[in-house]
Image 1 (tube, rainbow, N blue to C red):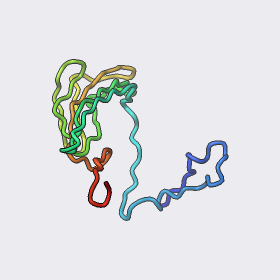
Image 2: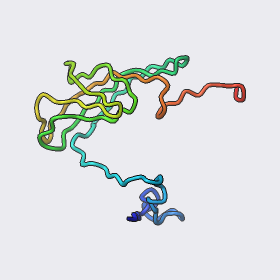
Image 3: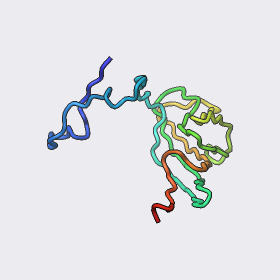
Length: 145
């Protein structure tokens, strides 16, 4: 199975000399299975991120608050990607709620089913020590001071 798409970054109004076909298969790792973006049932309208850093321990902690808009019907859970992220608390509004941390995702069951157009604020208290992606603690060593 082969996928070929136009490179949308350079296709806009054809101003770039190197726009053209982009072979997505050439970028995939050997054995990678195709995966597609799921239908968006819940959309973030606003995000507030408060973070703290401990440079010595290579630790990041803080809170993330999402203001969400529901774009589907009968939504009974919210799932966030959270690989190796420690979540200590989840608040919906001001109320602490139960959640499941699979090590890859945070799954938050909802007490009621939300409908198209409903809104919600949800806040996660989180931390990570020595993150492997996203934030890197780069320090001087013997070769770089």
